[in-house]
Length: 272
Image 1: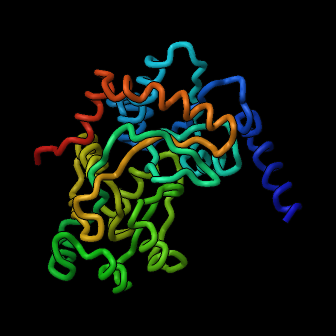
Image 2: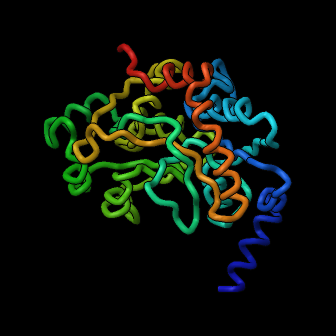
């Protein structure tokens, strides 16, 4: 086990991640990845994602703090937090209690519940077989449909069902890379996988960038739930200090006009 841990740390250093693991001279280090419409790295909506706007609002609300942005894939940011690295992840799903891995800020925004994104013909099949909202467990129990999930993503109350019925099966695909969200929708559209789970705003965004023939369906098991969005930092003294700073600024951040506009753009229901 000691050799394995040594190898993992060595690998991180070789990959150039060593300096980001402990950068305690900064008050907050934001771990940002390419995941529209949370973070939009390029194109017409560059830097206009809801989490881009959140980070900028914190920068305005805490002008005397040293805040930095580091760009890594989502899975790598999650790994750094697990290892106690000095980095915070904006727009995580807030848990009611801190864990031995991460501390969570107070709630900053609220998302509508995750749902199923699939092709129109499968949407009709799903509602006919499993109801509307869709009985997610019954759908998964059939073993008939292929599912994709970006590396590092989790889906709150739905995640245990995904792990129970899909992990370690041929029907489960984990999608990596900087454009994992766009790639998974393209895979659904091309019939390489049958459905994914995500927020309705993901489909709203991609319909504005490149209209695609996909449908969003609500899920019975989380119907009407509100998903609380927060910042997650490592469960270390550095992470605790960062969370204290973040919490002190949240009342100002949630009223920040640019952040409010970004939330309205992506989170409010869109006209067909």
